[in-house]
Image (cartoon, rainbow, N blue to C red; front, side):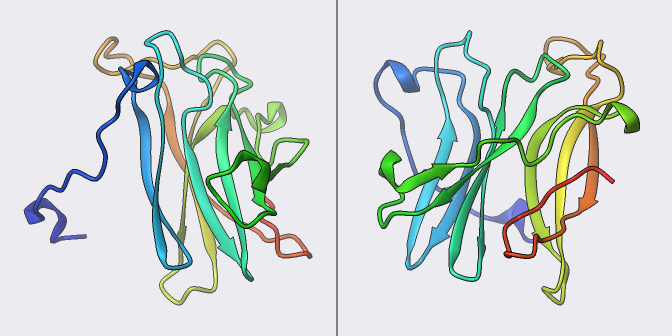
Length: 172
């Protein structure tokens, strides 16, 4: 990490067409097998749904987690796709979980959870989720460049694993 400020910049993608015109969000690189894939969200400036994704691999299964709903609401949440086919570039190769894997918790005062990422402990035995959220239902997204009173707060949670080894995210 300390060497990143001195690393050379490299262009890995340039968008084309109206879907890539603007509002590019949350690019991330993922290695699946021996190939690298770039995943990002883009669209017209009014588009703000489904902004962040992250790939997890467990026991040979590939999962793609994503932010869903609008980050302007307390119902911003995380969904998950499972790669069930052989081509990760084909929509038909993915199966969507019918319910969110992480969402608001009124009991814990946590709303609008999203913008996730995952990281492993140094020994690889644990996985942690980093995300941002709000403390009240009245807070929405406030982009720092537009409103210095940005209200989204960063958080880190231990990321448990379900008995079938799927990601099983919950609020503690």
